[in-house]
Image 1 (cartoon, one colour):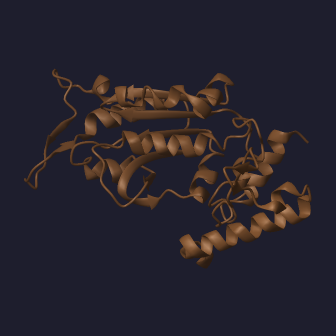
Image 2: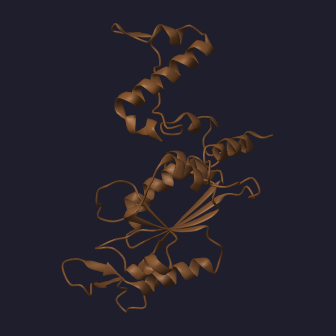
Image 3: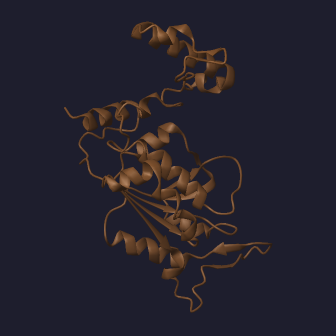
Length: 253
């Protein structure tokens, strides 16, 4: 079996309860992002791991300006809320037109809205999403979007934390980064993602590199021993102790 397939098997094992993905065709992922400020997303997707995945043809990322789909002569995408108060609300028409335009070209597994009251983005959620083929991410802005969009067009809502951002673009970038690095073949080392923090409800153990002694600051002797079994046991113990100290909530899952 290829390393990519083995990586897919490992990811599936980490998403227990999410169903079987082995019958899915292993293809590149396509992500379409809808936003009113596409300029905010120009840089994050053109560097580092995400750029590598795009260059390899393993992921396509397309950013669409919602204003291009507005039927308003001024390309407006927002209006006042019926409830009154400060802040504007994103209107239905441009967003529905954008989503319908994309759906005419392909089927989408999820239409995701970046929302403060969505499910929390976790490593398990990212694992599941990395096995999807096509997704749309809708970036909220202003005071939010018309509730009817959420009721009739959105299939999944994700929050990256309990705080408010100016818009959903940074949240979309975080989601894309956390998902794309898990797509089989994107990372040079197929096992790298499997040892990340949260992958098994533990934080990662401490890591060191050369020199072994820097101004008296020494690397633990066990890591210099060459005994892989003992090193693995040390890393597991360190990961557990670090998690117990810093994130004991993870051990309750």
